[in-house]
Length: 130
Image (cartoon, rainbow, N blue to C red; front, side, top):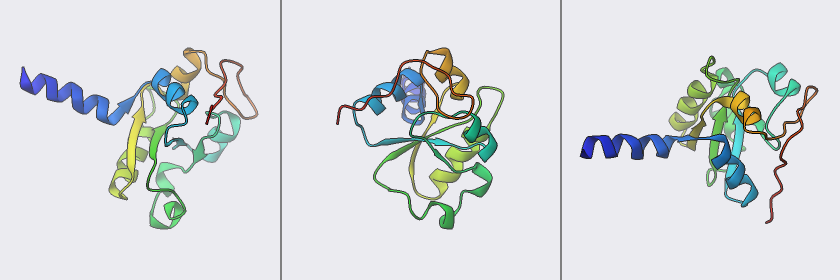
C-alpha cells in the first residue's frame, strides 16, 4: 500500500493536467507554461503566455534568463509526442522546478481552453486576478 501511495504522490508531484494548469495560471501562482516544441509549432498555436524553448535547445545559455523561483510546466503536441518529457528532463537537469502537462496542447484544447498563434482556438481565457 505504501509503495502505491508513493507512486501516486510522485506522479502528482511531476505531472499536471490542463485544468490544474488553467487554475494555477488564473490564480497567479508562480507557474509558467513552457512549449518544448520547435518554433513553427509554437507560432501556429500555443498556450497563452507560454514561453518557447525547444527541448533540443535547452541548455545553460538558453535558460539563463529564466526565473528559478517558478515552476515550469513543459508541454508538446500531446500523447503521441515526447518533447514535453524531454523538455522536463532537460529543465530538471538544469536545476529548474518542473512538471509535465498531461495530454499537451491537444488536451488543453480538448478541455476548452483558448490558444494563441496563427491557428489560435477560442475557448476559456486565462485571466489572472493578481
